[in-house]
Length: 598
Image 1 (cartoon, one colour):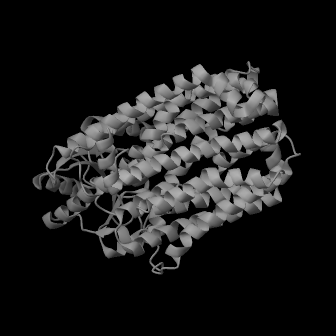
Image 2 (tube, one colour):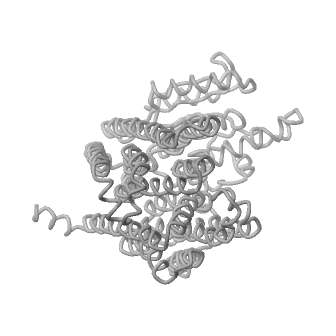
Image 3 (cartoon, helix red, strand yellow):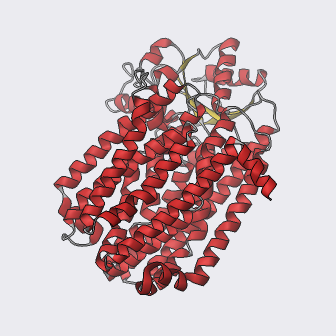
């Protein structure tokens, strides 16, 4: 055992792993301590503080805009320090304005926001410092993601410990007034995060064409609804209980959700280490042994999740009495109820980075939004019929149970895909081609000929015909048909010909990376008839270009009409064997994560 530990510590990756686990463990202890310090200041401050922390956790994803995960991913994929710094600047160019907007909104409407968070107007003084905390933790996400993507693990873990443990505890040591505690915490979070970014920003090389800024937001924006849903899963139950049973019970639920978050945080090191490692291996096509490694991790996380829940459920009373003193006894019932959700939630938290690294689409976001829908339905029933106090605990468990199942299902699919791709030749690719025409139609004959050329070049091709783009019912039915085809055929990439409705529909429907070929009047709409068709078609095309994994334009004139990502677009005609080979190479690079767009 000692020899094995010694061998782990001799490698940089091993030392980084040990350091990350140690940091997360110390951070958890610090988070535990800060709530004890809040409890020592009295029940009123404790109740308000736990609601503030849950509210900050709910709101900060809106400011962060999904940039932390994207920043870590893209920086890890780059070796050029200048390109890495441009990604940092791109992330800050989104987060800083949104943070300032939140501070302005909080300063203008503290009363209504107090009513939303606390159920009354008397806590308006806590709103603006809470907003500063939200901005500070969002900036921390940017700094932490950048440092971890660059492999600066020591610095990343240092600011992680300060943000999660050191600063909040110091605030309660220095100040007795809760409002002062919040101001100090927010100010120091902001200062430490900015100081971590300044050296990189001052190194120069930030001027560019905005490509990195666009990539950051394109990757992060679709994940924002999922991030908001994640915060809502642990916050909406608090707001609902505050309105049905009062602030005291709402605070108990807030504390239970905080314990739930702490339990999931125990698995954060796995996620933090997994994202850059998987992203790097995917971009370099290193599939050997990856499926087996993920399988062992799956078993480990599942077993640890079960053990954690059993440990707390059996020892909740002594743990909370030791932790919070005699006042901890009244929190046992709610904490036990809420902590049952730790089993699926911890599993999700441990494996979510695999799905972030593999999927172009926000797979975790889809699962989180579905789980939130389950929670909202249960919350509505509780508000409508005034069910017992434990109802929201059961509703939360049902929502988390779905989240855990959906994560397990998607992880199994990713493992099977990695194993399948790893067994094939490096250049083998399966393309699903979407043609916005009937099977016998001749409008897109050149596109169909190109698909046949892909076959002659050694690709496996599956054809999907989108027969109607104007009927909403037909589009819904076609979406179900496309999803069935994707599950059955298991393509590596989807290639849709023509923009407008066809491209946007495909991007929104496919769980597989989508490459759009723009043909001409899908971007240049001057010759299109119809008052609404002209602007809507152009808008749909530009939205599809924004979210697509890859772009092909048939000529330079078409490329010049892109609002964004023109530097990412390949210019390749549709007709001819040589253009077909170039297009197939582009599809292959997107499918196997070999481009920056991927």
